[in-house]
Length: 208
Image (cartoon, rainbow, N blue to C red; front, side, top):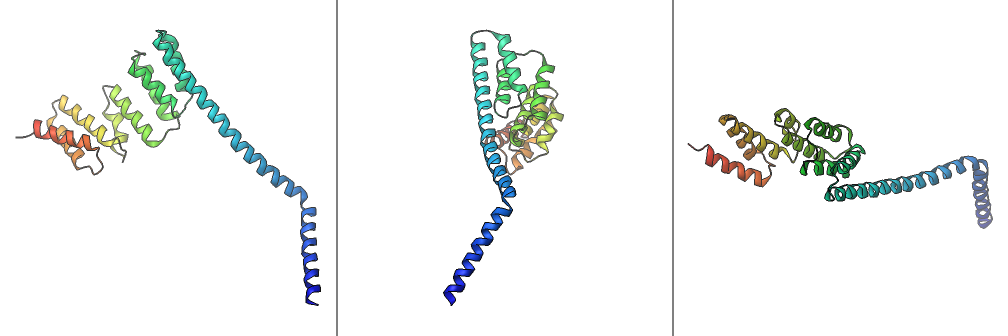
């Protein structure tokens, strides 16, 4: 008797499962289709991104080779085009190449390229802070530009403070310079080399 009941229950359960699939086949088809399309879209998207990355890498290499062949304007145009792509890797590299080789003399144009990276390119926080720091180095009036880093917990904070201390020293604002050097020394996560150099500057230039 128990065996017959078990068989009936099993048949009933199987029938319910069968009916469920029959009654909901359209919904199940849609769900399965969405899953397949999503998986396909994910891998396709990654493939497209990878191809774009490879294409930008080739463009960057071509630009540097062009410069080595003394075709300056082509190099500039290609590197600016890469910057405008807004790639987190190759756009900063392209700007650094322009700066390192002094390819653009117009400071306003350079600053606009900096702003493009800072404001419109999706970068990791510390990469963006590094670019802000480099922009400050590039410009003579940089104190205001350094504020976003100085007022943050960025790994570049001690570098920015050191640059500020050197600026005050060059302007003969000795107390301000000393205060900033001391701030670097007291900063818990200061770069160790920057901290050592700051202590040396205090011992050498501010000892009574």
